[in-house]
Image 1 (cartoon, helix red, strand yellow):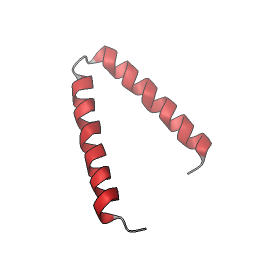
Image 2 (image 1 turned 135 degrees about the vertical axis):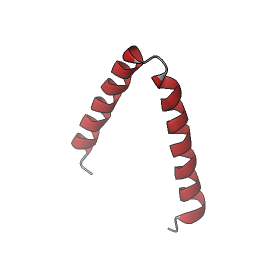
Image 3 (image 1 turned 30 degrees about the horizontal axis):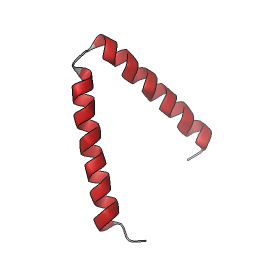
Length: 52
């Protein structure tokens, strides 16, 4: 993917997370759980399943 598009996506996601933090205080707890689960799945995939 183009680096410029990826940068724009990161900025938009970061702004959305900050806005959600102020609107829904409990949102951060769910976000942390979601990120942790995704990182675990990606780590398992990269470590055990993906062949180079």
